[in-house]
Length: 248
Ligand SMILES: Nc1ncnc2c1ncn2[C@@H]1O[C@H](COP(=O)(O)O)[C@@H](OP(=O)(O)O)[C@H]1O
Ligand SMILES: [Mg+2]
Image (cartoon, rainbow, N blue to C red):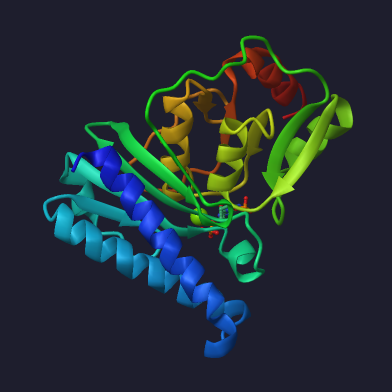
């Protein structure tokens, strides 16, 4: 099985397990924190076991496992977030995701984001987005429901922008890919597992992906803290960055 198909199958498989668990939450007496923890654990176990079976030589960086720094000497590292949008999962909403990405020799080489609440899996296979000109105003910008960064509030006050709050970094990046929103802007905190697979998917579709200062997003660094990102259609990039930096 190729790496991309592996990422797709694993993200989809973990998503199914998470849906099954949530369907049984009442009978198991799980809610709130317990449901979040059970979801994180269930998806982590499935992904860790599957990767160990399929790719025993590869390193793994996961939100839900101890960070084994051996990954820094590995040419291939799976960067996974077993349940992104844990809060929304526990609230029985649809905006949560499973992230599976492969980092290889300095680049994201494959990635899949499962959106089990929507019955979708998006992957990093190359495919051009149809839009060739920038979107009409107001721009629709996806932002965190629970921790929207200051810069997007400033943007919304000063430019023609509609903020669209959603949970999960993966869900928000996929909302750009799916054309539901025009951009996703985040700052103030995140880790490599929150964005690796979504960014691989966005890059495959030809979208712009970068840090808020315009520099490239880099993965498998010693410190996996990667606090900000912008994902948008390339036609929006220049104007969006001008607006963000005018108020940053
Ligand atoms: N300021 C911050 N610091 C650390 N992590 C953050 C953060 N803001 C968002 N995140 C993480 O990014 C993911 C998407 O967040 P949000 O839904 O608010 O957009 C969540 O991942 P998890 O659900 O995997 O923990 C959340 O923990
Ligand atoms: Mg996450």
